[in-house]
Image (cartoon, rainbow, N blue to C red; front, side, top):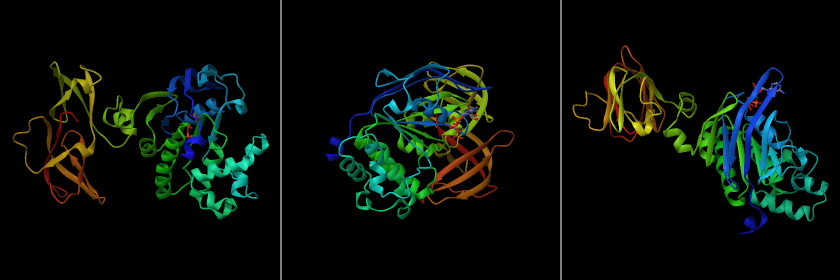
Length: 361
Ligand code: ATP
């Protein structure tokens, strides 16, 4: 309850027709984006795609060449950085080493002569569960704890919008996964709008309500994580959000509800609702965990696509699943992730196998 009283609601963010040109280089092409108030939004993309530039534009550290930025419906395009209701948490969190944790968190409030800086700082530290370490110095804290202090410092003055630029990048994998869940919980509790930038697809998918996949200064696709994963609209998005089996072939026919594609030496059926194009050359994708292995040609497989025979090229065991790489002679390879449940098929290198998956996948 205390947490809710502490926080004010976040504001929505709107980017309208944003373009950013540096001398000789266009970093952002034509960006339109609306982030609803109180949501956790992730901007995901490879290095150099324009994520940080987008954050810097929102923070007011860069000026757009074209376009408008609105926070809570107010046009802030011409508003100076420190007057925007925005805070940023960077990967390098640079706490003041000579100050205690509580002084670090209260510093900005004191400087701006905001009332009860220590009370507010303790409240922010309670939120990140570090109030018991308030009197310590930063160097007496672990990396994850220091990152939480940086977060407390960023939310203590209740920004309508919090920008996170790879804030967990410096942490080791285990701590990072733990912090991802903690950040998500904090965001849900305080209800501020979070705009999180990352190149880590797992991080974006675990934390965000909405993910925008960015490529070369433009957004390729935006939506709920599970929708992007199950229904990527482009090969780039399919590949960026995990491994995928991709077969390219010609559309051979169509019914009211499905198209058939000649690919991987087979007829592959794809529901029309899941295909962006219904003619010409298309690429069909299926996630490895949706594919089943068979030791013999499935005689009767209603509702399934069957590709094979092929030979197992490689088997690698990873605990919860085993990864099979199947070579379809003259065509593509198929990757299969089989859950290690103790039941179901297993195969060794060189074995002849067939692969199949449900048409809806
Ligand atoms: P990373 O994940 O590596 O940080 P990013 O997606 O955040 O990458 P940006 O930092 O936004 O990428 O950079 C986008 C592109 O704009 C890059 O190609 C970069 O070289 C270019 N760029 C960024 N700042 C400038 C600048 N001041 N002058 C010229 N080009 C720039």
